[in-house]
Length: 284
Image (cartoon, rainbow, N blue to C red):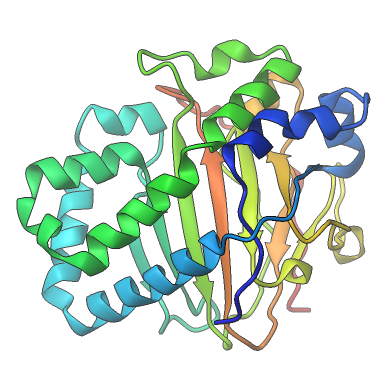
């Protein structure tokens, strides 16, 4: 895997918003659908290490289906626990769609509570370096994201959306491996308050559009961004505040591609049923 300079240290997250324009955040979302946050180039290959660790996890679980089943059982038990409500979603754990035509991807939804739940309830996982090593890599990358999500909410005057007994936003870290046979279908809206596109091995594959009442394929484009920048976009959980989600899609590239996204959720929240603008097909 090619080594890239893609490390975002804590100081970057603490000061990233200072480099933004004076345009109000809500207006930037309405105008472009995203905010770019730039940081300095650093020498640590953190994400390359994460993707190498993810490959080891994939290889291990595909070669040992008993462990894949144990991980699935742990996920099912976790989503029946009280900690699941903090994330307001059932998406946790390993999703192997490598053989599913069109999808052809593998992903993992990581959270610190899921990590701790597994380690405390399934001691045998602590003895599997392919699993526990990947979990630790995810935890390190996720750590600084809470500061940026909290700052984004504050810029919108919505500090209360992340209020909970834990004192920090609930974060799901999604790591994805797209296979060469992956085919893009339709764009989608994230079921989040905010999504942070932390890293990608192919930035040009991500297309997005600001929210509109009517959307066509031509509305979508790849954001012009620096090599070491991240993108912040709103999800569907802010519509009650008249902030609408950014539709986006990952197009096919014909080669293996990795990406990491941090989802800022709303604790103990039941999403409203809202009909959003229809999304165009990219297969036509």
